[in-house]
Length: 146
Image 1 (cartoon, rainbow, N blue to C red):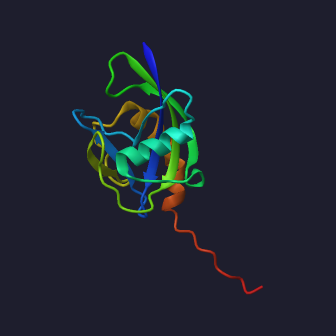
Image 2: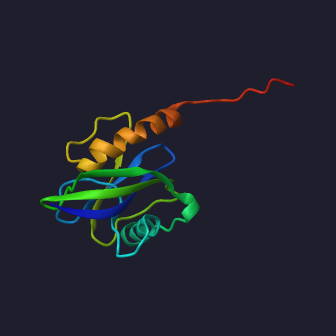
């Protein structure tokens, strides 16, 4: 079984929704990102892929590492992915470009669709759960007058 080295991004909008992409000719929704080129760092790869797929340019400081995950590839037979995943706020509206056919939003208070890529469904979403709870909390600081 072969292994693909990939880099992907969890892009969250101001409502806490997660951006998903579906590549042309495939059924599974996944995170934006893709295969790393020879000698390319995960950070450089995810920045390149975000530009190619969404015309989105993010600086190094905009991307926070979420983790490294391994899963069966969604669109490649007998293949696993070794993925370095980052998280970032989506600074503006994006549109599908390059090989992308469709964009979708995953909302934390709605059921997940059945056609999620294994990496996303089995590893990334569970890793995001603690962050989602933090984002959902409405924490206010009240001045004490001291």
